[in-house]
Length: 259
Image (cartoon, rainbow, N blue to C red):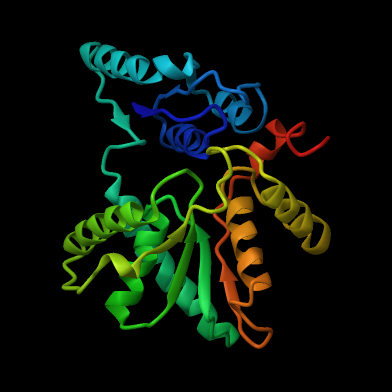
């Protein structure tokens, strides 16, 4: 039994439901009845994958999750909460992802000056651990999707990185300064479209045929564009933008994007 709890348009909830379907397991999603709780986008796919979906009011979500986990356990199930259980393995997975990325760079002759990504935590942590382990001086620039203190985020990333390195039996010298991330592009809150993220989303769609999502990659691209415009980078340098998905959520954000 797989359980996930997040916002109504959660990518992870959708992926949890899909993996459960593939593995022949049951899935339960305890989302929240937020502004984008229409049966569209990720929520539509979560239901299509056969998950049981409950959408309590946002301030009741934590209580509803605890009650659901207790009820499932009492009924003889062994619920695995993909929002929290064994979460460090998300970072471990991105260590492997970094190796794949480096192989692609070598194959294509790309020597990036930096990698930009949406930095919740684990994607950022896995990349930094991998580059440190390989002795590669690669600047990883994270753009936060949620309001937070940048220094506190770096300290939190450091703790996760040390845990990740321990699991992989890597003896690394890590410090908070290794984790560069910025909250300046979040806007009023997580999942809220900003003028900058809306511009980035439209620019990539109309100039490159690439789709960004409203909560994560559009904020990260807004940060990258702002840094380029501020002179951080020059035309002769190469940057990698790590696209972490999320396209289905677009379909619940039509009004937010001006349509």
